[in-house]
Amino acid sequence: MTGPGAPPSDSDRANGLRAIRLRVYPVKGMRGTELRSMEFDDMGPRFDRRWMVVRADGGFASQRDTPRLATVRPRLADGALRLETTGAEPLILPVRATGSPVRVRIHGSGALATSVSPEADAWLSGVLGGEFRLVFMRRENARTTDPAYAGGHRVSFADGYPALVVSEASVDELARRAGRAIPVERFRPNLVVAGAHPHDEDKWRRFAVGDLDFSAVKLCARCKVTTTDQETGARDPEREPLRTLALYRRIESSVYFGVNVVHHGPGRIAVGDRIEVTERGIVPGARPGGSVTEPASRGGDG
Image (cartoon, rainbow, N blue to C red; front, side, top):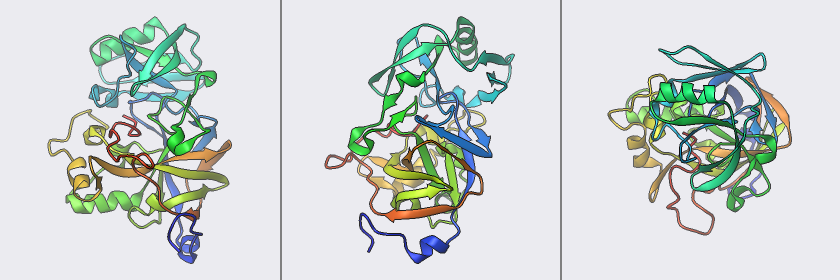
């Protein structure tokens, strides 16, 4: 049995699936931070994409239009958010913002955020070159996930869903086809897993990492953020990995890599945790029952 609702096979139980890397992205679009363990609250990984950079009109800035975001390194320590980049003094901010409410937009949908400080706005504007503001999401202002895929869940400033999973084997297969190394950081995952066959995560309808349960709700449509070097902010001159993904991971107008997931309840996972696939089936790419021309920007988390 391989269709929706298929139970785990004996190979699922014995293949040694495990978590090998965990990452959070405190500020949407900026560089990720490696963790040994990750706490999940009602919006996803704690402190993941709880801050966001917005332009003067309230629209969010991402590596799609502002690739220099990749050169800014956020760090969380001692109750503070520290932003670092070459050529500027570090910016240190309290974890909780107390500014005024701000209306912002993420892929056309509105959300309520809280301004951080004029100091943060000035620092970002100088680093990124333009007029930018830093905003924070309070728990009471959390957004809802798309009910077409995952009704009843909450999300921060992530593109659409609380977390993203990719497998080491999928990255290796992509690199083999491309004929060059493809850093996993290009895909900005929260969880990297080992022990799977290439793209096997596409079929994990339900799975557990340690004691925390997850559901896969949508394949992740990819955009040009994946062509951005996560150290320098430079675009790949050969448009990799999109060029190779288009050869074998295309569904009509989009290419897919990795899986958007929701979690069930609060909990904590850690590097080395065993993964058990409890239900296999089809994880959709485009909107169920509709066209597969969903914009590639949705769910890519630039």
